[in-house]
Amino acid sequence: MKPAERLTGERTARVKGRRIMRTSRLASVLAIGAITAMAMAPDAAATSRSGALHITKDCTGYEGAAGQTCTITESNVRAIPAGSVIVYASGVVDGVLDSDVTVEVGPGNVVQGHVTLDFGALPGNVMLSGGTGKFRHIQATISVAPAGGNLWTWDGTYDFGDGS
Image (cartoon, helix red, strand yellow):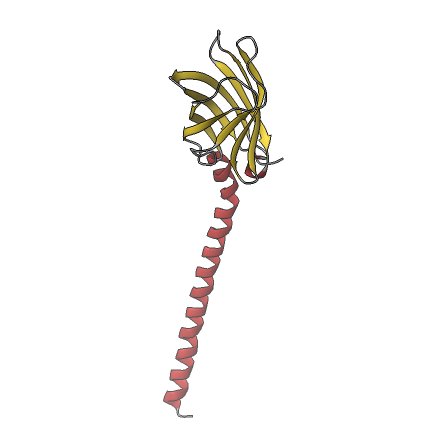
């Protein structure tokens, strides 16, 4: 090997070593950033899974009998979209609805709860607590009131919880 080739080879090795070192540092910084992001992710997810709940339901055809339904027409909770169906297990007795309810969102995803509504002393209350599928850990406290015609509103708070 000629002296010039040896120097060029040594210089190339030093440059490659610096590149490898820089690449290693960059990889370390990126790894630390990814670990930090993952550590913070549960907090961000928990925040987005709770908040204010605003739902409008249409009770056209509901006459207060057990098994009858209302349909959600508007919802600010993405997990409970318009088109979801509220089913009342019991009927109205003496102007009071005191019934278990289910909110059927889709196959395998049903919210369970209870409504207490005295039509002579509005608003009423709805408590949602658990269910199936993505609603296993949901908790919600809701005020129910008439919005005119066959429309009613549910306004309150919800929390999907973390399952612990």
